[in-house]
Length: 276
Image 1 (cartoon, helix red, strand yellow):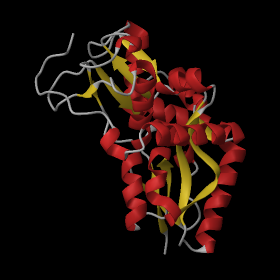
Image 2 (cartoon, rainbow, N blue to C red):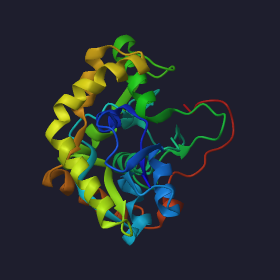
Image 3 (cartoon, helix red, strand yellow):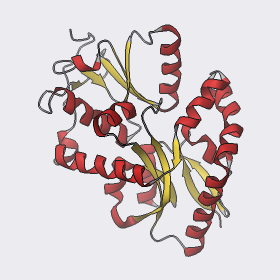
């Protein structure tokens, strides 16, 4: 019987998808956050899991070598768009947060804390309210960034920061968004099929990027050169430097948000206006 493997339906994973599934496997579309629950429930056997959610999985999973999604400096698809410079944020300003990724929200929390103090982090915008900034990830972020680069504005926002670039400026390390893992109770054969698949990917990544770029450009209505630029920015075959960046993120999160999700962005007031 073929085994289900999570595949994030974002452009950053397109070169992986272009390989086709590993032997005796098939892909199941999962957002980054949903892949965590899918692994816990046994709905999938392997996934590129957000680093921010690895602790929740614990010993239930094992890493599949140094493979995943990372970025050194810019990432282009984890962006914070805002009505003011990032350096001007603090309470009572509000932010809109994605519900698709555990790592990206944690990363914004740390970056906001470094900037304005962890006791002055902006509030989470209430449903229906107009936030002072929006955390946008994946394909939507990629489209918004292209519009911002073309016109200097998107959705009324004139300012933008790339979260991976902001992290690198602070720590001089790459940021790892996701790591490929497999359930620890998977069969030895399945684990070996997955390892061989990723090894083949490493040998063919450049060609797979070229194969994936036209599909990404067409699906997102973006120029081919822009899609190709993005796919080449993403690091999928990771190094010891990426591993060091991942370890630093986990250390920083443990130091600044030990209380867990209760320490995240507090809820802001209801209302449809943006704060001055």
